[in-house]
Length: 198
Image (tube, rainbow, N blue to C red; front, side, top):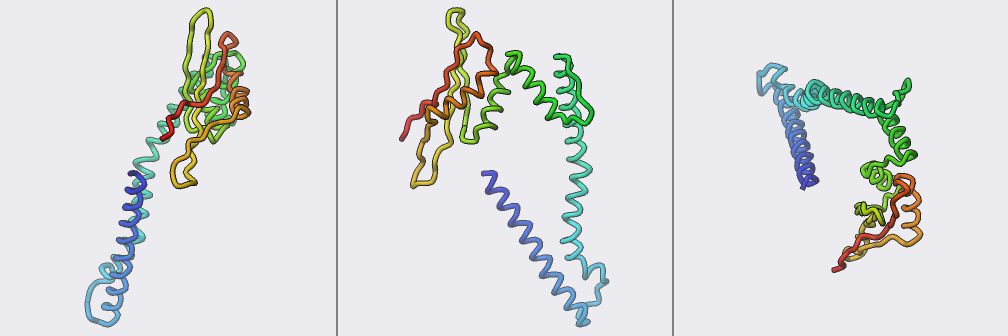
């Protein structure tokens, strides 16, 4: 749906630009032939629209969108700094917010204070073939377990959709990455997400 809207928006911009270009040629021809006595500002109006519209959009972006992004980045920076302070960490000179967030994740990973969100991001970034990742936790005192269910990206190369599954070796590799994030009291199981093939 969104791709279709983007496509229509691009067509609209190209259509307006083409019409302005055609009008510019017609207006210049009429002016140079003496068929119209318009002022040059009116004759050059189409080219001013072609050049001015993108400049107007850039100016609107700078004055409307950019400040909100700066505020959002500042709020994120303060939030990450507050999270770091909770663990007795400080931002180093020249350290970006992303780098500080990675240090916090690493610290949590080492201490066993893991976050499912951090673990999911790590798995999704490390293994591009992972389409989705779900966690099922059993906190029973006798047998605390965490089941990580991963789904592999579907194969669309053939005539239809082919549901793929991770091999045992790939699941073992995901297990190796996930294990340091999870406290030792949990027994970890990695499995393919159950899929009904149609």
